[in-house]
Image (cartoon, rainbow, N blue to C red):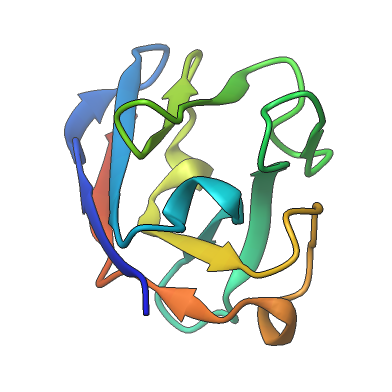
Length: 124
């Protein structure tokens, strides 16, 4: 069993930055691949970024490529999402998720555990 707790969301102006954190509990948390998803009001949950268990591989949605960076610190069982050059369309609830097997996944159904989410609001 893995429990995930996100933090770091908030209100920021367009062009600003935020760093989200996702703390994972469980003895084997560091062996899971991790992902970030987001869901805006009235829209489906969408993939943002993912990282393999080792941190050696990452993958991004086209909409955030070059602006967001996912990385992890397995000693702290924490994965991060650094978000730069934020746009109003980045406004959403951001969720972190964990998938067994350690390899990158991009679909919601592939993930086994989910956090409760953290709100990110970007004002224009």
